[in-house]
Amino acid sequence: MRLRLLLFLTLATYSAQCFARASDSSGWTKSDLAFRPVAITTNGTAFWSCGSGEGIATSIDGQSWQMRHRAVHGGAILLGISFSSPQFGYAFGTGGMVLTTNDGGTTWDSQKIGDETILFASLSDPTHGLLRTASSLLYFSGNAQLKAVPIPSNVPMSFRFTPSLVALSPLSMAAELSEGLVSEAGFVSTVDGGKSWTFYDPPSTVVRSFLRVDQQYWAVGHEVVGKDKPGGGYSVPLAMKSTDARTWTHTTVDIRPCHWEVCTLCTVGGCLASDTLIVNPFGTQPAFLSFPKGHLTAKWAATPSIICSVGGGIYCTPLRTPLDTSRAGEPQPPDETFPELGAKPQVIAGVQCVSCSVPQYFADDKVQGRYTVHIDFLVRSDGTVGAATVKGAPSEKVRAQLQAQTLDWLFEPPTKQNAPADVKSGISLPIMVFRSR
Image (cartoon, rainbow, N blue to C red; front, side, top):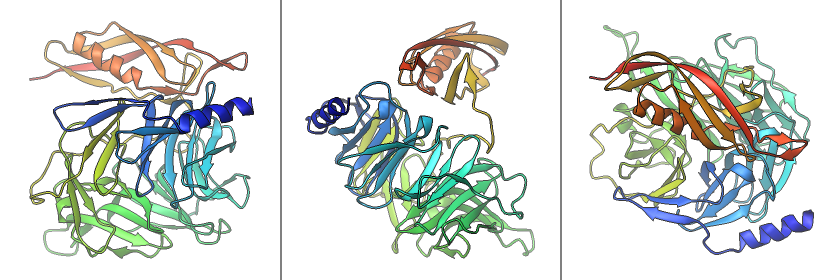
């Protein structure tokens, strides 16, 4: 089996371009990989994407992609991928699967850390990092033994969400705790490899992104200033950095474009100020980049010259220097939702869901009211949905939206008799439809 796997990886690694590409009038080029892409990142110079079947692929230009890893049969769905240094990278996903590379992504080694799906992870090296499963916030330090992060007593009871984790080094790790998607947030952190943990809640702030850039913590969002002035306070853009997640320094670069639409969905390439503008607050000089409207999603990454986004494939387009950053653009794509800490995994007809969100409300120009729809779907052995049929939808528009949502669902890869297998499933859902004007 190991010989077959090595042979498969060798052929895939050195294959020429083996993915379909297509361009459209928006200026974005689509690449269809040999697996379903779920996440994307950069290591500074190249794009890296991961997804179903433990697939990992890389590209310099966002168009020609090369496979670097893939399971021979079945395999986990990789939900995230990142690089802590040019050489060390990691990917994580269902069934506790973690893949690591120490040679810049040329080869990847797999291991299981626990059995639960890893929703978020940040590793500083192969034996130090933070993990978030549906039930727990965990860390490991020096070995693969997982330990629960002790929540300090001064953490508000309402801070039940952990949208971001950052492991700077074997000693320094921090997790963002918040009340929800757009709310007050703070940081539980350690500077001694997990021996002790403290919590800091920056006053009058809403943190929309928490990440590692150049071996520092960065928090981006907005804060309220001037609350002691006549008439009350007002909101201003926020970008601040720290080495311990306790003492923070505000950026000195120009982030005024974040005033129009709060900068959010940050990556190491910058933060989205709108659906066409990147603001980079992480350097010493102002940096703004623009791109055309089209295929931007919450899952994006950028090199200095190209931006790529995951959604029904991978879409990429060149970046440009904007002519005007003083005008408000359209809002960024919506942030991804994430489960409350301790939430039980959703199970649909015996198949455990990883990502199965469906909006409860729809707009239609012909119908309105409450309805119950039934969706039959096929969960493939790699955890993706291969087909979906919607019954009882009040209109074709609503039916098409529900079907598209279902085809994006992700599940724990199903098995029968300990072997990967396709599984048929179904669910009934209540929805509300409002008539659009």
